[in-house]
Image (cartoon, rainbow, N blue to C red):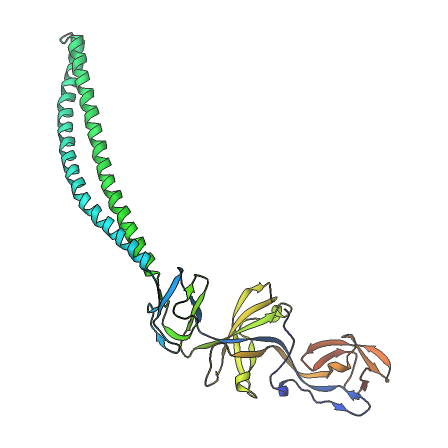
Length: 363
């Protein structure tokens, strides 16, 4: 939906004096004219966010009330978690059992380490005998049968040692995996159980609780609204056709329904560089130069972002302009003009008219 171009702040900013009579004729006036972009939006708290749960379940207990000051990490809601508690208890029992089994595996590891050492000692002896007989074989001191027996003994010792080392490695890996798996399962279960306690992400003020106890909630259901206390900003929507004119630091003139007749000033602090496809608008944030005495989230605001102001400009009312490029002189003669800045009521004339000429309002 396109934003309506409505300008609601003080008319004294824009009105240019013009002499007008009963015959709907006038002369252009010289004065100031300000070009601005309309935006509408709401008041939000700094870092305002909506609280959601990460799990589904029945809301068992609401532990806070609107208006309350909230600390970071404070529990806001308790969701029924009997099943999660049982899962956590089972994981804890499995972890304790794995610790008991680990002592048995550690005994097996110690036993296997002894076997590895014995296999290594035997391999050292058999390898020494093999190397010695291999060196004297060429002198025909040892028979072929005896040499093959020595060689076979050495190969068996080597194989036994390698097998023992592999078994020891497997036992150590089994112990590590069992402990890690059961420890991780316990941590996951404890984390899952903690998800049934919905906590605040940071300190601030609880503005609203959006659910009631006994409600079946889901991860898509908003539960509460939290933001920083006594710190507010403007969140405004700007039409896509006007967005190219908006830059950081521009002055904004703001009116609030809660403060009728008053005008406040703000500055553009943040521009979100993506368009909302549904509303065809861009979102910007601004902060008041001197904010009102009291503000609340979701108060409505209308604003004009000041693009530029020009003094001593030759202006006429927009109602005297035809097709954005002609005016009537001599009552019915069209004359082409070149326009410049424009506000909600007046338009600047750059070429085609002088201050002393009379123009007529088209019928």
